[in-house]
Image 1 (cartoon, one colour):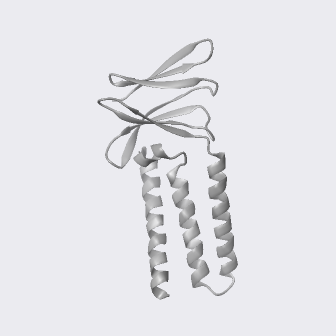
Image 2 (cartoon, rainbow, N blue to C red):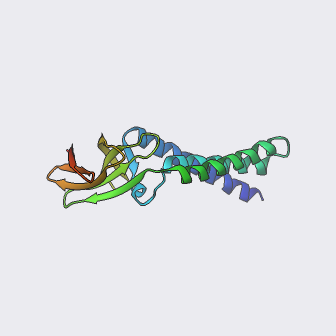
Image 3 (cartoon, helix red, strand yellow):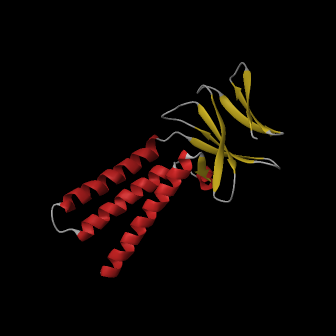
Length: 167
């Protein structure tokens, strides 16, 4: 039983350290390359999984009133994870050329219409390159020309282009 508790604590600490690393990298302008394959942001997922594991640690370790708080922590964390999965409207796309591999994020809420571009830096992380704002009724397409990403925003009647320098 003690071995299981130790393993659970190690996993909890590992999730906390992964959350801290991802948050630090994000606030320095980087995102995880795996983000392009998921619709959800990894940072809040890591945080809420950490909260679930920390609550399970409390539930297993304590015999008193903290069990009520631990159960509430688990229920709240699971509810918030589910709510984030339902309400997230951001999307990620991979745009590649011979020279560049870009991740383009189209933000839904809380900042609708924002397009953020990240350039692949290494195997794990991509760095922030630039951003622009579009209206929600545009159809958006991307093209890499030279050292620029050309965003073409079209409605039924017209098209507008915007350029983000990749260097």
